[in-house]
Image: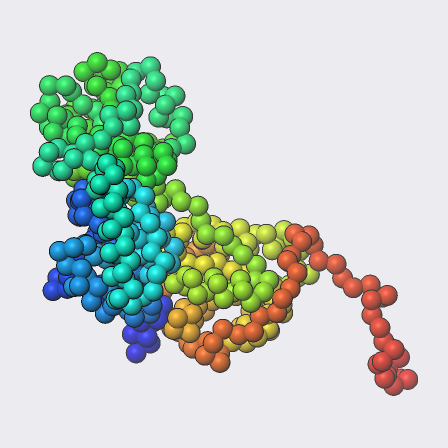
Length: 435
């Protein structure tokens, strides 16, 4: 039973999606997103959701009704962004549900800010459709920037960087960006088939990653030094380059969508970790725990017990783990022992066992406690257990987030013991023999 409760309340694994093939909602994923949405002339409304999200579950019947009402007029789709987090990250999804409208410029979708009822969704879709038609009447192009897949796809060839023996090291190896490099031969039939897909992918990746992932091409028949250096034996060969690391072979498909999906995985690996915040007031706790699937909270020893160096070592462990789990979209918080006693009490921490750590699911008001060591190894094991549905959970004391005191932020310095002048004994009634 404990395992089943955990699976419902704290799991970060993929569960069954909210939509099925019998619905008029098109299920989208990295394999079909470019084909269905980006290459389409249709207007699309796309919901990015997570199966565990209560607001998403409430939206589901309304989203289905809207999809049925708009059938044949506007396309309505849904992405399980918990399972396909690279696709969610590609469009800056940080909370669920997020709805975006893909109109004339598919590369710059608009955020939907309207109501969550089917009539409100339909009205927004029709308004967006009206604007799209007016743009087309005015001569603005709509739909995809690329040609249909049957036509080979299009893109800007300038977005594929021409690499040579002379510029490869300075352009690729010395770059802080990720690179996907195709080694080709002009006479190779497979290379000719890949060229339009590679070009289209390069243009899309350039826009979606803001240049953080780049696609290049090497004519290996001309620049034989590079081909020899990287052991190129057949064409086309695609390799992935990260600064300071050995290149890896690309093993994915040869369509634009396959290439873009791999590029977006590289990009998501490079996104900054979530900010580690001190709990200074109620807003910080509430926003973090309500905006993220889980909030990871550490209660660190009092500054007089650890000093600045000791505290910083604990915070560094937390930052390291936040970096390791940054794709999970979790919030990370900390407080000093004794600063937020109601929070400690609600988590069963209070008064001893510092440093302590809890993972809270604010939607279910469930939490799990770190039982192992407060170290990278111990915390990794704790979070990994949660990820696979193991461990035990309890209900947050009181069934709600506790009251939070407003406190001053830590100044980064060692603690200072109170002096004799700070201690007032005038109100203390001591017996003479105690003196």
